[in-house]
Length: 155
Image 1: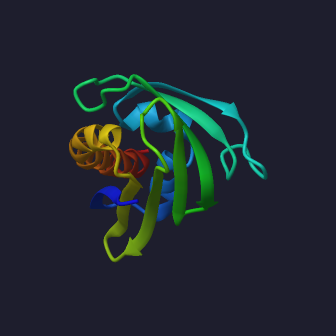
Image 2: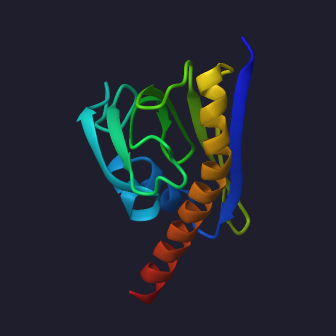
């Protein structure tokens, strides 16, 4: 089956550990992104926020996300470098996989957040929303990481 794809890239003037702190714990997503709430339903196999962990996210901005609550499961978590997850509820997509990759660069961290899923009718509808959502979400993540650096420098 053909796949649909969205991605966003950006560079934060922050160390990978700073960015990782924002993306590795889903309950922190409302601090920087378009979510009003998030909670873990079950912990990961080896760590609370690692592979196997299941959590939900509630959208606070229906402008970007048509679906109020999504349920996701962590597939892989490599501290400071890579996070992969799949959607298991809330968004009508099949075989959704997203990968967040952090790469150290001279002035901070390059972030790539990309996802693919099956090309179905419902998947194409979701694609329209996520093409707008991913760049906005990534911009908010970059801004939050850079703000954390500013706050820590001023402390």
